[in-house]
Length: 538
Image (cartoon, rainbow, N blue to C red; front, side):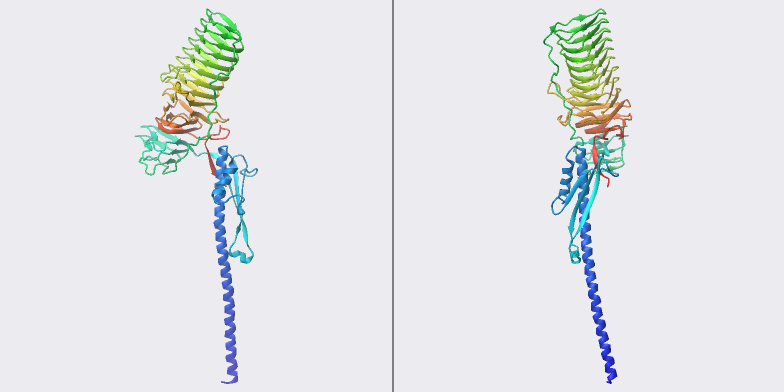
């Protein structure tokens, strides 16, 4: 081999060696880049996973806080607890959880709650590049809004928990929830129909036919008004003693006129024959009661009245009770075209239990009579009865039906604005009775628009056992019920074709007896529906 050939061979070997070295370097650099990208992918993937967990915790915290806010509870503690249950405890392992109500922006207001969950997330392979941790945060905002359902049937197992009778219908603008796990929880009789945005059934295999938008099974829903406090009331006589003066009752007749002064009248006062009796303002005890008849007029000016023998007004007579405090034992009966006007105040009226034929009741309006009650607080021990051809107008306030319930017979009229009925009992003498508003009665009732009982029209005492006396509201087109009908442990039979702005039904079971519509316009209520729902808005 010549010297020149040997030189070319050496050059070739050197060139190949050089190229091999370059390949090794390129491969090494490529491997390093690949390892770095892999490390970055692992860290980024883990960070995305943690960010999702953070967001879930923030969403849950906001919803829990908003729900607690709607229930008047400690919403901040509720939010912190929810975040902790989702693995992010404030102040632990660098986690920060904060809850607030935004004061500016689109979601500023007392109905919104914002949750922010943050931490510095340690990295793994990115530490090789000097990145030991990354700040992560998730934000959620929830609103305390109106619940999207307005019919809640609570019985967990009843067949026919929601029954629509033959030819009846329920047209609801909001959702319907039926807790019952029975396969026959929903019963549609021939010609019966339900229309609603959605219907949730507790049954896993409900028998048909099923309306459109029916979903099953759903988790049972707790009583949505369970936290609502019943109204406080007392049976005690709050009126001052009148023992310093005592005289017998009397009879006023033959178109006489008389004014009396505060005292204790030990026997019955009777007014008849177009006479006119006036009570001067003050404190009275009428131990024998007051009877007004024969087109006479009795006027009780403002004061405190203890009436132990009841009040009876009949035969086109008229009684006017001024504002004040009234403790009436023996009932208040207005009959035979008589009339009564009660001023604003506090009333306790005790009398016979209301009867299904409207011939008895602690507050009895019968045989063409009419009564108008002023605003205030009423405890009626024995219940209310309104007979055919009679009418009762209720002023705003709370009406405690302590035994006897309320009955309005066919042809009777009951109206009231801003009213709540609390239907309860008092031992064996005054047992719980349902509400009975008969077919052919005329009913127009609206609930208060503000205050602790805003939106609550009927409130059944929760201590009444399941299977207690039912309530019947079969008024059809003559009935308007604007408010919540709350019968959590008893059944309700209902029909109302009138167009109330909103109606909410919470009952153990529900039977629809004719065509009924339910709306959900809560704009008249200061704080919307009394049944709230926490809704994520961001």
